[in-house]
Length: 219
Ligand SMILES: [Zn+2]
Image (cartoon, rainbow, N blue to C red; front, top):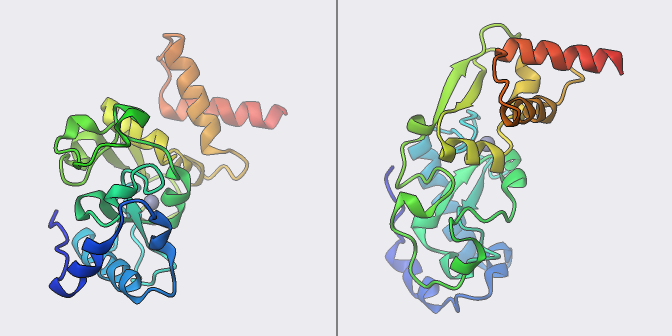
């Protein structure tokens, strides 16, 4: 991924930030912030080819309604990285809402006061765009059996992949793929967890979904 470079004309503004007042990010009166946000969004949208970094949803639009600049280490917990390009990425509003203020740093809240941005993949529980390769952790499996064109499941293969799926609730896609209107992705996820915890991981995904469907019908 090509990292965003802060343009010279915005450097004085970024340098003047106090590293504390992260609400500045949403100050609609501040043209410097608005300019910064829109430059970051356009840069990463081009780089990501109009695809959400976490869920890989493709949206044919550059409109800010469909895209939000994400702070990987949340701005409320790590205000010092508000304008750090290494901490920024573009994601869809659904992933943004799910991830919220969850802290993906391996050291949790103890890391919040550090002044230097983490430099290695190992510092992050979830996939980091600069330090990790998405496909090493999450596989995109085409969902050929459903009515929606070009849809896919996201199958996590590593602890990082699983943490990313959990933090952004990427299981929400199962619901639509399965075509079961009443079934929530979370129900399949709970079933997954139950089966894994109890060491009876013998069912295929189709069987698990069938089981959830039967439970739903009987309720
Ligand atoms: Zn997304």
